[in-house]
Image 1: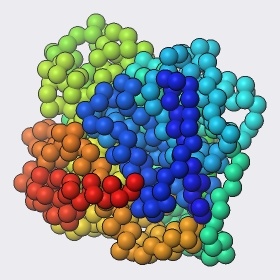
Image 2: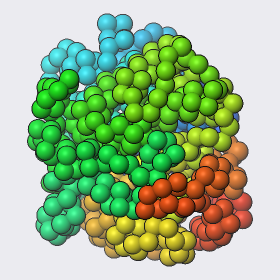
Image 3: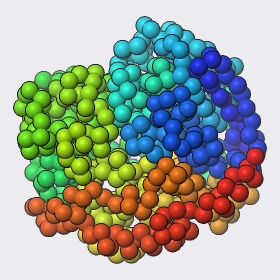
Image 4: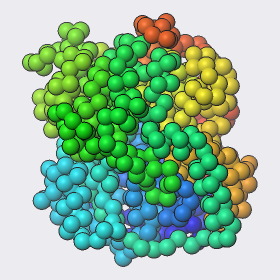
Length: 603
């Protein structure tokens, strides 16, 4: 099958067994790969109301038809599971070398189920699976684990996905790490992996990918590299030079950088940790994920101070938010240390920051006393709590839980800035109304990545504070396009340069299928509707498609967006438009009968 490997690997940890399966070709046609294929297996395989840390939950890794080809930025894998952090659909993705290694093992998807009776890690090759004892690496951080497994395996052309101590200790927002610094970070996949007593997975394969029309595919690949990457000033002149922090000055100008856990409207120290400061204060070397000419990743080294010599990839935009502005700390070296520590322990930086900020607010409000002071602006406070979270020591055992649990423990219901129990990213929803809507309707909760609406608000419409309906239509259009590109899958930063016609041309040349624009848009909407329907069955309603109460009750206190506050009536009006365009009812429920009939036809 052109573009696809036509093999699914199923691994039962409870029995140390594996099985190679095939699925109907029409499944590939209708779900493509990556996010689409992951959504198909998630809906089909994972039951509602299960314990996310129990044996019925599964880890579903998927790649897509463009992986292991030269097509630009096609270097990401997707991962689906029921989230232990949110209790709904969990999905995450990661770059680096892992996606290509998975594909070259000859698999389009890998489904891991059951719980191992012992601590274990897996070696996956073209020939199958080896189940290896993990006693000697249990307790090691992610960097140590990757090195030990690779050294023992003895081949450079391999990738290791691993959890750190946080995953072993079932921290609800533990992540899975590959290539040291690339992470499937959000929704807690590392906790699911830890619950299965699975420490790591090594992939090593050499299979090639067949292409339906090589001349046309490589012509398009060359054209897109030239016109959509090399000639793209946003990618090559900004992301390559500065990485993801490139928009930090724009956010500061809008007053949209969340500061002191949304208690301040302007981060005074942003220039000390922004893109220019990073270039001045860190030694930087560009590096890229698979098939990516942009190389926006930056291998950095701290030049001086307490953490001199520390090497890491980043820090990225979300790290500046998580360990900088959230705690009102403008020390770039401290942020680099937290970046490194989170990667080694395997904890998601965004969720870690939300949990620690809740603890600081609880302490300041007299809700609890951990036995030591908690303050904003105090790096040692943050580091101490990070360490306690990773090991679940003391108050860390509370902060390792989900945000709703932490709120209830401290008597602070509604205080966390979250949607569907996932703490939001580094864009203040009170200021950036389009980003807020993307948080509200995202299938995994408070995440903006599904549509990257900050690009629209900062650079296309230029009015973050308005409730212009054009933002709703733009969000839907971008979600539809990006969902298809997430099924190739490609990098988010590349997706703004593509349109649905480009997707048709590439997929048809690569796979030999006969897609058209209308069909791809229908496929995209169906993928999104299936994930929504699963969440509805888990209890999600329209009420869950809103922000936290602080967003409506606490206006931005100062800065360029002073007085900005979320408007629930306007959001409800937007939701009416959004649901209608998606073909969902007034409560946000898709047509269950038609989706079920469609899935039956996939058998």
